[in-house]
Image (tube, rainbow, N blue to C red; front, side, top):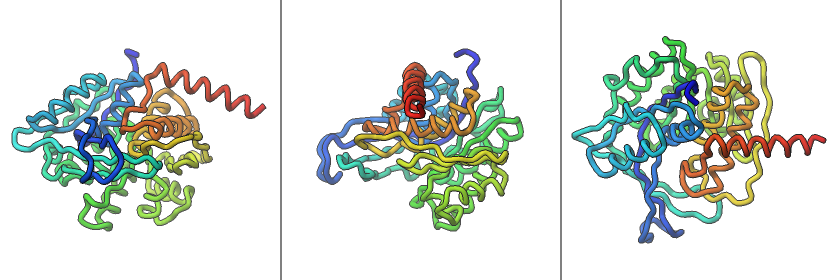
Length: 326
């Protein structure tokens, strides 16, 4: 796909150790290594679909950093902007193994990580030629003030050069000094973005409502062009500044294995569909599809499909939808 639109995202990648057996993390004796991070999950998903996917981050001069760089290369992510810190180490995390479909317990070891030192000097205008789609999340802007500054510069440069920007609110309250600061900073990014992807629970905090349309209207009033509200197993609600709105049903899942990463996969679905020229309803539907794939496997990005697999899945689901309508 040589003429495929390009994609850029910025954030912190971490080495993740997932417990091989259920139970308290303190009692687990063996783990499997994987890659984690909201933005890198989206970068992986976009690369697997054939987009020129660039990921901006900083890693330490250590084995975890080498693992992240090697993983990015394996996924065919453009790694020109995976920078290296000589003073700070790469962050990592532990994730529990759950078997009942509940959210796993996650412990982060990221304070003063290499990625937290990413700053405005690491962002230049060359990132935004020729007009890639920029995706930011509430995680990256919460990690540190310098990383938030880098994200603000990227947003400003992208908008100045006519790039479309999406923002996943993706709240991480533990990374903020207080809720008021979190709400202000997250909403400032959302208001400046073209497409906003909040969850229904996040909408309660950020927009003051648990009603999908009210959440969407809140961001549309403040300048966003389109909002897609994630409703979990119920699907998604979308609304645009052109008056388009509706609810797209979720895809049924027999067994939920791991919920972490579903929102990132949803973002891959929405962004990729829009870059493919689909409308917002189709984008929300693809977001639901990719989110449903992710919760059925263990790992944050392991369920993300290649383009061939996606084409096959969408063909099958389109046929099933038509059959149901008949």
